[in-house]
Length: 229
Image 1 (cartoon, rainbow, N blue to C red):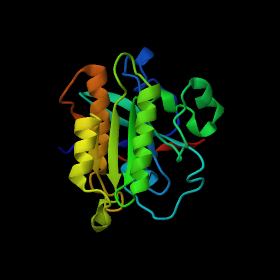
Image 2: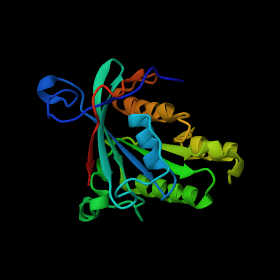
Image 3: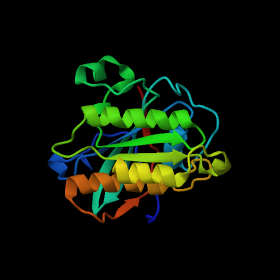
């Protein structure tokens, strides 16, 4: 499934649009992007927000979290998106105290959906995702339902170097883990919109019980706001 055109990046201001309360708009979707170092999760976020790609790591890459604010239309309602790109943390914090004692982990336990990224050419990065998923399930519950988790295999452009057959991973993730699964290439902008659409759709199903969510992104109307934490 494909969604029409891309995301709105906003800067400045603290208006009520998309934040609920006096404006009557839905609260923001908080998306946490996690993965081992070098899997390309930052490249995926940059491709989604700016339609841009670079092999060179950005300032602070791998050592701090970056919070990006954007927006999307879900089932006819405008929602703020808070996309947090986390560094490769050693373990998922088991309590709020652990979360806030480490600046790299702040806000991670309050995410509405987790995007766990691995490199299809690196077995260890998939093992990292397995461990992180298990730790999330053991420590995080949103209301009475499990928090949605989307597994993403990046670097599809390096398909010949794949270390685990795609159908094996897909069967494990979808049938055993009951998670969504998408493969993408940040470098060639393949399925990047799809994976964020799937992430928002999974949150929409939990919040709104809409099985077939309609999602629209509008990109680059204004500059995106990013905080390096």
